[in-house]
Length: 507
Image (cartoon, rainbow, N blue to C red):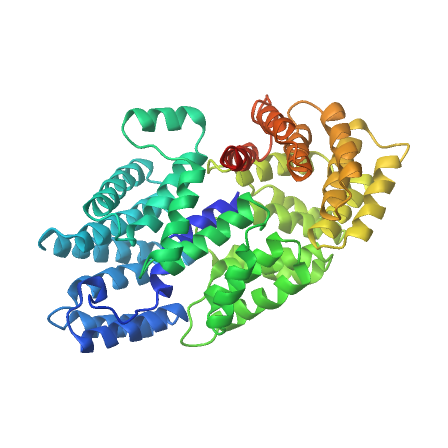
């Protein structure tokens, strides 16, 4: 699920957004007012995603007597951000070279809570970069070092709140892993739950000096991904975008959040702004804005406009991130434009090389579409899904109800239509109708399809809304127990575990 990977990207953004407050102790091992001013200048450029300008300021900071650690950290971070949004090998190489220099500099410093924090944060970035470049062992080793150094910083001073954001993210990640992996990590001394991670992020958001915004952004994304934006995540992203209105990065993030909350038309504006800003010096381009702008247009059935942005993303972005979905959705775009022959060439390029729900689901869908074109009912299902994803619930209900009631609808189509109607009714607060539709999908969905387990999850949500925590817990557990494998199983596991954690906290 892309949303979770976006959470990995955001794990470092708060370091950019943290305002430097007048304190007896200067941040980041800085000792002079002049160095602190350079630090603020460079961080301001990073916030606006003017990365070349930021690097220039941090190089100046590096030449001061006290600015080396802070400058090294942010120069590595600038390279890291460039690598994450482009997947360009040159930026990953630059990041690892700068990170190596930073760690060597930190190793030479006396032990302190700041050294432990900076070392842990640097290894956390290395873990993400290694994972992005498909170096699993390197990611695991760096993640282990990050865990240990951040833990050291907390143990040295529990009231030093900077490490809680990184540790919270690690615990959130560990808690989202399948049970067998979490058991193994626990045996090795690395535990963590989703609830624990959220608590630590909340602590950092409330009390840290430099990691406050980092924690707020990660909490916002976790809220969007795991909690249907019930805890104010969208408002947090809106405030960040409003604080830095010219930043293509924050425009992209807010646009992504709006799209995730079924506000396709509003998302379009911010994603288009991110694309435009990225083409204007001195701002840095966020590749992903193109993909999600294409999705925003696709969900509004503006297929001809979506085509151009899918093409641009596929041509520009070097790595594998979102490529499987982009090839699939480009094919669907062309098929909806009655250009089946062209669509086939894009379906053929969908692969599942990466172990992500979204890639595997896209691959299976592409195989089906290569075998046969969309049927008229499947086209209607797609239009109904688009209407729901765009927040046009009345239209979605009309289209999906017609599909469900069609005499020629096979059981698989009817089960999917029931699931999607359940989502429409739930969004409208029509919980009794939603419960009925989801129960139909559970009863009639074929084994191996996602509609029964996901409907079971949403039944749990409805019971939660009714205050029936016992039935809610049973529904979430039933969703987790569902076999065989199905599309977006990892995402369901993450959300169901988070929901169970919230129920347990309520007890």
